[in-house]
Amino acid sequence: MLVSGISRRADDGVLEVERAGPFVLPIDPLWLGDIPVVTDSFRRSIEKSKLRGACFREVRKVRIVLVDWQAWDRNAELPDELPPEGKPENYILSRKHDPALAEQIGPLWEMYAEGALGETRADFARAPGYHQLSGSGVVVSERARKWLAAHAAEWVRTERIDSRPGLHRRLLSRLLSSDPGRRG
Image (cartoon, rainbow, N blue to C red; front, side):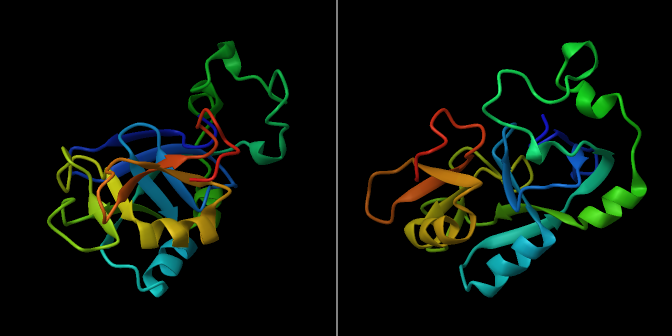
């Protein structure tokens, strides 16, 4: 909950998030729907990388709340602060939106790919079963996987989904993986 927050697709198709700040992962494959969300600076890095196929839509920040969790000991039995009523979503839902903090975080972007896997030679493609507006389901080429390993290994890993040449991989959060030390 503290890593990715709460997300939903609004009636107008825009991805909406409620999350903690000020810390935001540079790239965060939201655990609901495999939707990569990136910070503005990471979006610019991807665009400068010359990797092909990544598209971006701005995310609507509905509720941004102050929870400075990134310094907490992730190996501790209990977090430094427990949420009200013990419900993880209450880290966010029990607090009021902080417009100044939302501004400090800057724009967040949903990353998606227009071309489907097998239809494109791009470095970012749509996974099977996803269409452009239903959620991103982004998969990456070997070239993009290596770039992500060099620029975001602390936050993201990949998982092979196709064993053929031209291999593609699905993005996964390292913080949520069962094996966070594994490089993928």
